[in-house]
Each structure stands twice: as structure tokens, then as C-alpha cells.
Image (cartoon, rainbow, N blue to C red; front, side, top):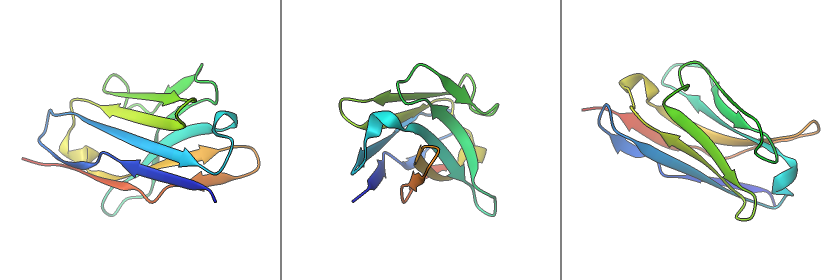
Length: 116
């Protein structure tokens, strides 16, 4: 069955870094665009970054530009999100998503808390 399992979340101080990883299985990974979303306390889920199936195109929301980097390894079926210069407002549950024109798959999320 399809599985997306996020890892790497945790508690980090402002200005710190975290690297999130999402391990995928059960579908043809290199046929799907992969995205990271987040949902902060009391907020709606929002896109963070997306990387196309073969990795040639990436898009970042404004708050992520210059701080976050999305990458994927189609041999290992993983997608990562390197997050630098973290701010308290980055506190959220971070989800990975596999998207195609036909269907989307979501992981369960990993909590990121930025606090001193």
C-alpha cells in the first residue's frame, strides 16, 4: 500500500536548522511531484515547496525562499526539506505529499517546534 513517512521533526531554537525527510513506498515515486506542506496551530494547511517528478523544477512559497531547500532522491524514493534560519512562526506540523493529475497521497506529518 501507499506510504509516506515523514521524519526529522523536533524542537529547535530560533535561528537553528532541521532536515525533514519523507520516505515513500507503494507507488511509482519518479512519476509524482513531491511537496511539503505545513499546518500551524489554528491555521490552514499551506504549501511550503514543491519539486517536480524528475527534480528539474522547484517552487517555494515566499516565506521559504532563501531559507528552505527541497530535494529528492528518485533512487531512494525520498524527498527532503532542509530548513535553515528557523523562526517561531515556522512552528507547524509538516506534511509531505505526492501529487499527480489523478491522485494525491499524504503522509501523517512531523511536528516542528521553533522555540527558545
